[in-house]
Image 1 (tube, helix red, strand yellow):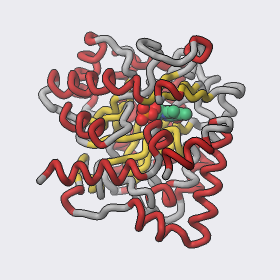
Image 2: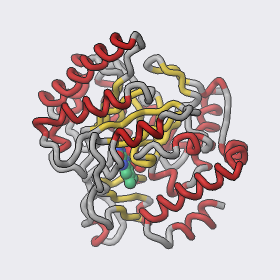
Image 3: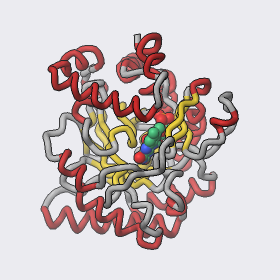
Image 4: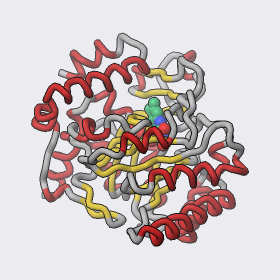
Length: 346
Ligand SMILES: Cc1cc2nc3c(=O)[nH]c(=O)nc-3n(C[C@H](O)[C@H](O)[C@H](O)COP(=O)(O)O)c2cc1C
């Protein structure tokens, strides 16, 4: 029904507007008591789907990727679609508008999206207010820096977000891989990245011992456009800084092998969806093999079917996330993936 009725209708309208309409509709339907229906349609509960990673128990390995619920306003309602975890953000210390609209483009022929949202968010302290309610699902807090903060002062921004969210999320994601904040990806270089992660780990130890609670898992989200040498650096950095894992991958700046109109391909921003699938799987496989499975990997990029998800898991991902596939295939995709994981375990 989604692919043949709902999607063609939604795709008649501007993608960013549709995103916010969908939010309002999900909120409205949930407040009218339809959460039970969503759960009935989309949720699978089965102990064989559970995963234990970095001290957390995930009800299933399929998560919603960052950038969907940037301001942490809909995580509980979204969990009714069957996700085992929801990643909020990217959040920055101060609220920011992001790039001028139009900044989100559908590449229908390629089943892809180009976005240059630019970390539009209401700021970490606004999100904290929304996170004070009871969570029905594990929450990842994806953190970044404000556009106006120079890279030389970026660590401060990450620390502000880390401290603000510490008591409100289950794990952290350090986002240095968005192509839409000028210069951000330079923080993926060995020296600044090691410094940033060391500083966050120090804060993690200080904060947790002060409050006599466990430290929070910290993961690093990387771009699919890194070279093999840079990926080898990432493996070293994870070992040296002792962070808990890697999310591979963010969107790509590549525009290879696309069928959509040239004018669309010329839009600046990160490309997600089907064309990203193979490269992100390649990155997962590389990290998993070259590190000898030294750390957990969350695989994300172009998962539009159960087969795509199984491919990521086979390549070395421990958990997976979706964004663009959720928009193109609808909420039923989460259940189809979880069913396939159950079947593959038999
Ligand atoms: C509109 C849009 C906004 C996004 N915003 C963020 C973000 O704020 N932070 C982040 O780490 N990733 C962000 N992403 C990247 C996704 O989390 C994901 O890594 C990427 O889209 C690849 O997965 P997919 O092919 O399933 O979409 C965004 C993606 C899209 C399409």
